[in-house]
Image (cartoon, rainbow, N blue to C red; front, top):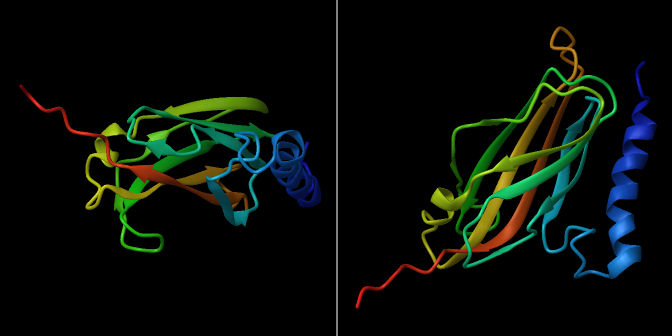
Length: 159
């Protein structure tokens, strides 16, 4: 069963608005200060959010939550860091988060090594998500980019 694009767009809008209504701009439900941007949205795929929504000197994994309204043949995440928004990015090897059957899914992405590579103490951590429905149909492809503020982890000082 194919879900119309309008339903997918509505689900993405609902995911963003639920947090705003529930907890204001600081709520992790709306993703603030993380920003989710859909470059293409033609696969049966909706990002529901990331946790944490920013990194303040603590380097842990990112949990990506997404919804598959139909079968997804591939979901790949390409984590990256950059020192300034829109600047050049250092990408890490892809993390496979699929294939997935319809439903709600979580995917854990390790980012500690990336945060240590920030040129400055502050920057931006990002996830480029590529989701594919039927691989034989090039039209079933979504690209979503999530960016969030990040601070390089403090280095341990010895004695």
